[in-house]
Image 1 (cartoon, rainbow, N blue to C red):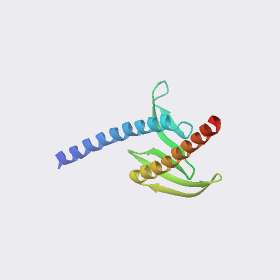
Image 2: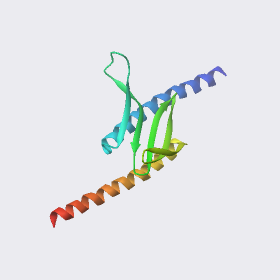
Image 3: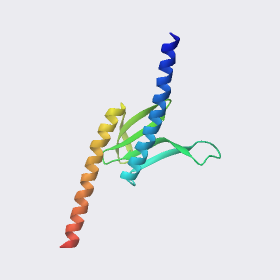
Image 4: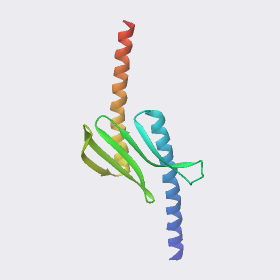
Length: 126
């Protein structure tokens, strides 16, 4: 029994490290890929430390606000429907569902940006 417990504890420690690393990478990728739309919340590792870690991130799209935050050893994924600054609905989602919904929304945002850029280009070049 002790061996099985030790193995499970080892897997949990490894998973926690992986989640932290993946969360850091996701935050950096979103922040670089969608400047101005992603807010990353960082916390210093100590009072005098120069390093910090990601505690949460928020992304605002046309239809939703997406929040991902550290919660214990895992992550909490929230999608909120907001209209004129008022949250109408807030959903806790599984990480996979949250990422899928975010991907769909960001594809719409990038499509809108491409259309805007093309319209401005065509106007200026005519």
